[in-house]
Image 1 (tube, rainbow, N blue to C red):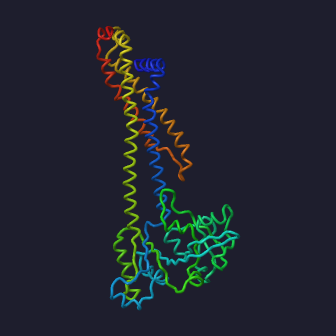
Image 2 (image 1 turned 90 degrees about the horizontal axis):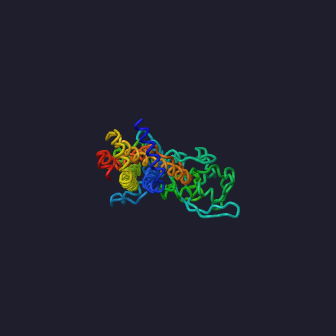
Length: 409
């Protein structure tokens, strides 16, 4: 009965001073909305960042690139090495569990044309293992096959962005394009890699180019059988330094003890970058939550001020209640309920605005902008807690007044 009476008088007081109550709620509403939206935004950004990193396919990859001999001795022995070739990629996966796949890659700058459209692109020549190494998929059609390599077929997998630029909404699979002076059949369109938050030059150029069988590129556009890069997927990221040394030693033996190559440990770089990104996102979460929390604290100051004013206006009412038998805890609960009620209303309104904001901005994110349950719970508890703390002193002060002091006031 006492709690019910406290709630009833609270509703009457809030309704009797609508403008004052509304102004008091502004801080709590904005604070709750900011906490929910900011935390949800950070969570959505995290999903986008990790998804973008995953689609790049570089988390367990090392790059072997052709290089000039490092030492004078290697320079004198350079004629013993045939350079980086397709056979190196095949030999790296033989007799070991450390390397799961390896693919040679060669490049050529050529002009692609379809109808009246033409543009210069980077042409990639590789093998089917390339899709396994870098986790490449196709949006339409298929990827290269061993048969394409064996028969030196003139087939091409267009990059995602190149396909959009040339064919637009039309399906390019089965169409014929001209690369330099040769006709190629489009057998597939590569999937999109990265996103607005994560991207790299290598993947971007790949999406803007086209991929053909390595044997076809060597046959039509290259002077020899060497390749500038071999991409390697390691079997896990544990012991990367040991895998790096294994890779170096095996290539060194294959090249007749001539070190005319360089190995870039991309997997280790990605792990380090992921740790840095995680630290940055965690820091932004703390910063944004702190900024949002300030609004809630400001709202708490407003609740404190309103209860002080309410106490001054209702001093006679407090004295009258005490004179007819109301105890200190009854007066304390009455004012505390009013403080919590105000903060709860503000939290509910702020949550509603945050939901509307997330729904409005969600289409700008690939994974949407889902509202974080953790953020909702945290914001509501924080808002109610701020109201409780802000209302405690005025409530305690009101409860300790004697009937004479209150009636005189």
